[in-house]
Length: 101
Image (cartoon, rainbow, N blue to C red; front, side, top):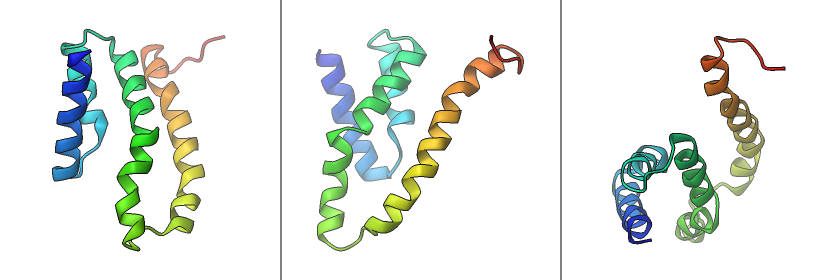
């Protein structure tokens, strides 16, 4: 449990300072220190990033008038489709481009 809390604190600090995403900060420590598979680490990182943490992170910027809510909502479908497609990329690469089934 401490490992997850420590990774979360470090990721929050580095993300806030450097503006980089959780994939580069959260996934490697989950793999090496929490002994997760890479797939579980990526999915866990996404789960944390897309939850309440995302809403809390954007809140002060929205209050200051720096968030274009309409623009953010218009970006969302493309992000969803892109993320959905990206989920299948590792298995396609592993299969040599052949689809299962």
